[in-house]
Length: 260
Ligand SMILES: [Zn+2]
Image (cartoon, rainbow, N blue to C red; front, top):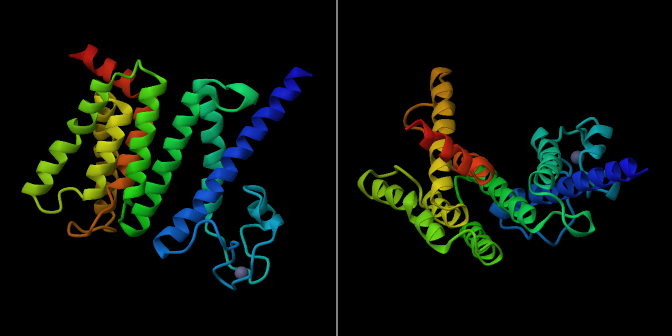
């Protein structure tokens, strides 16, 4: 019986994450278009039909409708449903990684982790679409860092302060010396994230971001899909590196240090 209840709880956690990421889809679509993220029902961009509550169930609606709008048959972007599944898995992962707290919800650390993942996903997708990273996301990450410092004094404040400059300052200097080396949004993202992650993990994040971005560029250049002069959004790769470093940054740094 307890196994069944546990199963139901995990399914509910998955659904919670999927619902939250479904909302993030809305934010990523509306914020760059200057529309309210709170007011206004979602509608099909093809025919303008308002979506019914049945069409708003994350993951399930897409599968039932076979990925098309019921009214006009326009294909729904795969990204939306992938995001919903990713949200479900992210919530469950945070629950497994940091354990679950009261009422079967995420523990405090798990909640901070999930909130950070939410911000990173929005940063990555909006930067990918528009090459802009909004300041409100940097502020949100910085606030998470302060909360995390207050809740877990083990994360020493000096570590956070060094973390906020160890990557962002060299990036800033490079951007001053070489025009277009890094965008201001990327630099601020690494400053705020460094405060949350601490100096070792943010170094790992930068390293991973450079590897991921480098692999992407190499593949796209080889396929002729990207020319050397094309502007390039680095945010999604930094965000991926930051997400990985949030969970395993210190372990990766330790493993690297033991090699030296
Ligand atoms: Zn439609």
